[in-house]
Image (cartoon, rainbow, N blue to C red; front, side, top):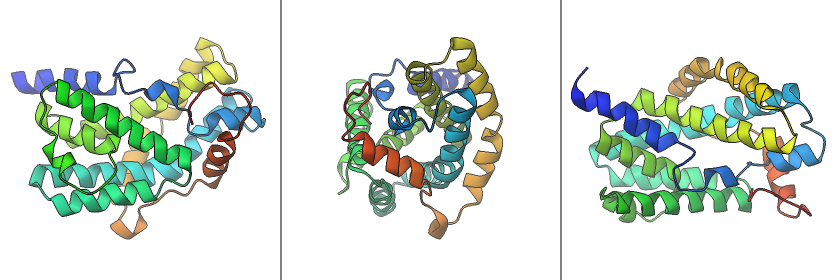
Length: 226
């Protein structure tokens, strides 16, 4: 392994860390309402909820688009970037999910600029900012390979969701760790599933998450922004 590859793995850790100042910890993606409604009430039901989301949304929408954005950034294909960024935004079913997409993207773009990473490619397309494109630009700059980026993105997503669940249900820290183990056991299959998805198959198929997210907009008390 070269020195560049050795450093790249640490840049990946940095990119997916909860300490990255883009506010990932402030979103639950409908999980807060699912707990409020009693749909999620213990570790088992939380695992079922998150496994459904990763299988029918993250692996069928976000990971395939992440792959396409990565290759488009690599090749400098602005039309492809704009197409998939717009596709991602239009696939977010609720105002909260769309706001989250833009807010995360804006925060990451601001951070990358301060780290002196060129994001002109993202600024030159007619699309709302999103986190996936920023991650791909940073990955190219830091020499992070696509498979590692996919693995890192999945870990970042599940860590944020389980942390939210531990606070909301609430669960103990041990239950949180067990949930991480059980859910991540499916991740190799999720990456294989995402890789096999053709363009026409890309989309989110999680009506329960969309319903929870829309109802969260008017929830009386909230800890999370979505």
